[in-house]
Length: 252
Image (cartoon, rainbow, N blue to C red; front, side):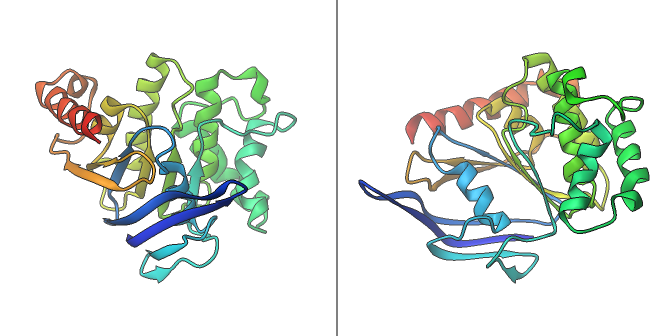
């Protein structure tokens, strides 16, 4: 689904060029959930924007669904650390914003928006304003907005980073359920996080990046069985892999 070939990114700053990414070569299979971990400032978020076509790479080549990425792509949903909901619009209207911005008739997607909200436990909150919802509930709404147009690709930039530990764990399980563990039609997901346990728990593979300029230091396949459960978090296998990823990050 995603092919990165020698991707690099250098910013032009007043003080001179800043190299954010260097020689990123990576493939993400269709329906795969890949987590990116690395130190702050290593270019994880920049890489997501390059994949989405929001920022052109200064070196290398990017393909999504076998097509070169030269402009923003339509078939992608993005979820950020902050929910970025419009405070004056009801929750269902915030979800429908994805259709509006794509030039589509929101009325045609209302039933799907309500279905998604019910799927993530927000049934009955359609007409509430963002301020009436908790942070975790707002992030669920943001996930619904990203899924509204049923994109095959989902890019998530530390979506649970600002939440408390219990809500974060709950939304991790929610993401796996919405993603479709065990389904043959699940979406391709690239998930950026600073939490190594979260990365190992969610992902099929964990990609460890180096400090700036960000490069791929090592990739760890995650052989934990699916569906992942609360018990999975306490397993010795998960703990051992978390330790290996941590040791690799410590050496980068």
